[in-house]
Amino acid sequence: MARQRSDVLKALDLEVWVRRGRKSDPSREVDAESGRAAEPAAALDWDRLESAVAGCVKCALHAGRTRTVFGVGDRQAGLMVVGEAPGAEEDRQGLPFVGRAGQLLNAMLQAIGFARDEVYIANVLKCRPPNNRDPRPDEVGCCLPYLERQIALVDPRVILCVGRIAAQNLLGTDVSLGRLRGQVHAFGTEGRPVIVTYHPAYLLRSPAEKAKAWQDLLRVQDLLGDTATVGERIS
Ligand code: SF4
Image 1 (cartoon, rainbow, N blue to C red):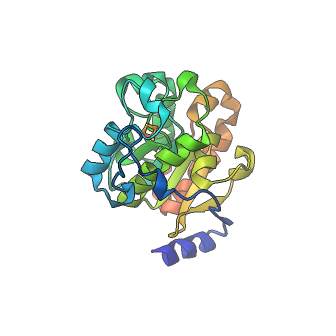
Image 2 (image 1 turned 90 degrees about the vertical axis):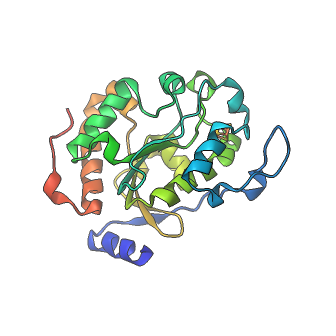
């Protein structure tokens, strides 16, 4: 599979970046309240993973959450969308990307031929940081194994990372979003292709950047090898 992906990337004449960053730390697979070793996320099936997240107290963010935001969509999707962390409305509803930013994400997906329920959507963090501050490294270190397991279970052909925080944490880099865009990155040992684009909340504030986001989406479509479903330009 990894060989096939790298062949596709070469055929598209796209540069490949390999994640240099953080690996999940097995020592963090510990229940913070009981101190007992928790079953590693990498060993869990969907049901046990979802219930592990629902009851997770591995980092301090559990104390302020209304609901965990596990993820939503087709668990066998070819395209997986990775965001940063729940905001206020996501925390209330337990769903990622709701509200105006969620609507724009839906439109972006529709533009390349996907209904929202045809992709899988998850965040780096499953609990809302207070006042929507950036995730802290220790919080990401605790939570990332859940996302890594979700990626392994979905086994998407392409990952679309939306926003700087999601991209930097998934790829383990501090390179700016401007430099991460426009290239194909490789995630994990399989070299799964990752495309980075702007967060829809940013695009709502900076609509002039939608043209660049459209280029990113076309690149996703190229990687998925489905040029027949080109939709409308994002408006
Ligand atoms: S943010 Fe992640 S690691 Fe922290 S408590 Fe929530 S689910 Fe657990």
